[in-house]
Image (cartoon, protein in one colour):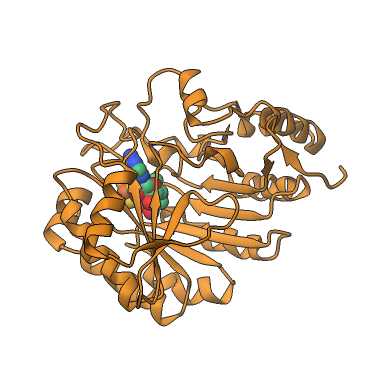
Length: 328
Ligand code: SAM
Ligand code: SF4
């Protein structure tokens, strides 16, 4: 297989893989999972370590340069550090992780030594009671310890806060304050209906409302340039160490520059967060497909990628899955 580039029908180059390594989680974030959790995928249905390694090597040959390991909670997977070690020796140019920060602390020195480029830490409130109400678990102090250790090890960190009416809008300004003191990017994310129930948020807070709230408090707030393919609109406030970001995940304002491919814990390829999945890579691998056959299927799927998240959503049944089965 010769080295090539994955391009979709709109000329977008796809070079970023988001791999959800498990759907299991030890938190129960209100916006992601019902209190009773979800029916986890059987272990035999998960992509194995070897299958994940094969997939990443193959995608590197198709031009993928950047990997984000996500989940569920990726640190619940026992072989995650071995996988990360293997990935650090691959042709990937960048490796990133998204974590809820509850099981991350002890691994931070190794993340640093393996050259993990950045960690996205989910943190929806700086108030321990509200944190508990949102995540349904008492892990606030543990997550904050993780945050401070990430700072100590100088690992570039992004804070992800899902903004929800009636739950944490009073946290927007204090959370932004983290970027005043620390060199972090604090990103405010619109809530999406991937909560495992199919219910849509009653009163969604969109990117305009978030920006207005920030502007009222920080008059020097201004837009700064973003990297190609970024989903966040980046903002800076005078005197801040770090930056702010707003991710219009539900309004989907950024699809025009999408460079992503997603693979779920079961091995389903999704060419858009909002699609229902194109085909199951694990099944194709277990049926004995060669790398060339698998590559051809991926190239074809990317070529037929939806124009944007609205088109992808219009071609599927109702959104009802948990984000832990997609990876965010
Ligand atoms: N468990 C890890 C964590 O929470 O960081 C990784 C997986 S989690 C599914 C990835 C990201 O998706 C998190 O930042 C989380 O806040 C975000 N997310 C989950 N459900 C969401 C929803 N319904 N709307 C918007 N963002 C969501
Ligand atoms: Fe778990 Fe992350 Fe979903 Fe929260 S957002 S329940 S931490 S997978």
